Structure formats: C-alpha cells, structure tokens
Length: 191
Image 1 (cartoon, rainbow, N blue to C red):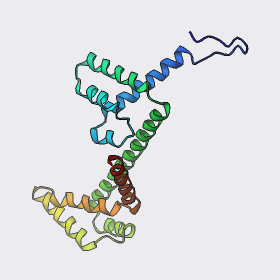
Image 2 (cartoon, rainbow, N blue to C red; image 1 turned 90 degrees about the vertical axis):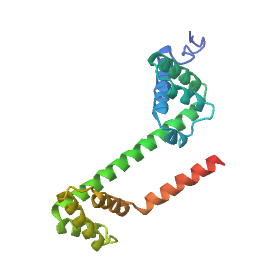
Image 3 (cartoon, one colour; image 1 turned 135 degrees about the horizontal axis):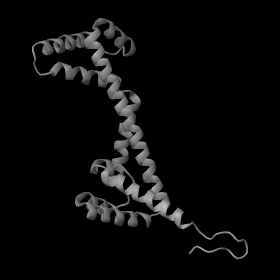
Image 4 (cartoon, helix red, strand yellow; image 1 turned 180 degrees about the vertical axis):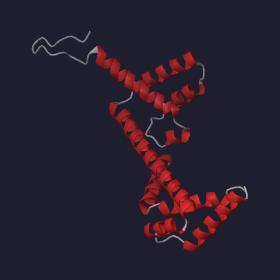
C-alpha cells in the first residue's frame, strides 16, 4: 500500500497500476534484447551482469520455461538504474533508425539497378549526373553483361556486381566516418 502524506494529502509513491506498466515496459525491453543477435547486443550498453541472463533466455526454447526466464531477466533489469535502462532504449532506437536508413538505401540502389537495366543510356546519364565519380565504361560493360546473362540463363554475376558498384557510389563520406567512429568506440569498450 502506497499511503498518503498526512500533512499534504499527496500519495507517497507510484500506484500499483503505474508500477505494473513500468514492469511490463522492462519485460518488453528484455524481449527485444533476447531477440537481438550477439553482435547487435554487443553494440548496446548492456551491463555485464545481464548478459548471462539474456543468453540463457535465448538458449531456452520451451515456451513456459522461456517465458519464466524472460520474467527473471526483467526482474534483474529492474534492479538496474533507470539511467542504464534509458541508455539501452536510446541505443535500440538509434539502431532501429539506422537499420531503416540502410533498408531505404538498399531499396534506392535496387531501383537504380532496375532502371539501368530497363532504360539503358537514359538512366545511366541520370545516374552519372547524380554520381559524377561513377565509371561510365565499367557500368556500361556490367549492364551489357547482365543483359547477356539474363538472355542466356547464366548466373547473375554482373547483375550482382552492378548492385555492389551502386552501393559504393551511394555510400557517403559521413557513412564511412560513422562506421569508423562505431568501430573505434567498440574497440575502446573491449580495452
């Protein structure tokens, strides 16, 4: 029972409903952590004390036992500081935003590849306007080879290489810097 302050009449703590909502939020966060791959998990600021519980929940496949382990993980997480849990949530949100950006970039590259194969020189001219550093001759040769592969039912080697070339073109210097910063931070964490 949370009680009231006798002088002011205000309640002395959060209600049971609020406590339950907070506990369910922590449980949902625990489920997200268990669903991550070990590589993704290593990029998050998860305390070392929680890692064995997360791995154990990942290992258990029986429904009820898995649910029980998730509840135990949530209990351990509630013992952590609120700031720690907020840092984990923020890092998860940043990761999901990054993955959305990556997916959007992949879709844009795929559309370029389809346009290049369907429209030919017109699409290539537009691509070169957007990415002047692109090698026109190399792209033309790849497009010609990809069309030939399709006609002869050969493996799509040039088709895949077009995608790789476009991905390199779409990569910005900021992407490279962000990747290096993340690698540097990961190396510092390991030391």
